[in-house]
Image (cartoon, rainbow, N blue to C red; front, side, top):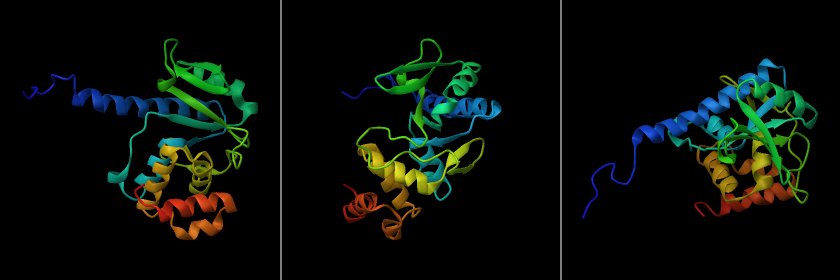
Length: 197
């Protein structure tokens, strides 16, 4: 028997609110960092969404993650700045984040990537510096080139999906293979050769 609308707990309003909460978290965090004079860049899935939106807003993929690139030397200043807008610094198992309030969860956090450092020791390359960025609407956005290198370095399922999103809207194309370090170029070529996988 068919369930009536809402019987499974679905709510369009809640879905819209969830997306809006991520956007507000991103803007609140980046405004606090900028206001404190901390150099940063938005990276991760929201950076992919920002770049994709410059070509085709209908191709934007929502993400719950807010990932910020900062220099390790700016961690204390970042902690102080983000505390003024309700974020609480936490670190565990090598993961640095700012949860949204004292009861915040890792899923509701701003995750930190340190500029010029490898996320994992066996990564092919280090993260870019915050200088590899440009102003966007309301925040500083990592450059497309640096974002592609980061996604090819991480190369998890979600990173491959994000790279395919960039390929789908032609922000990147086969000519990029030669522009990248050999191992990263090979990963991009693999994605080009296996569309939809």
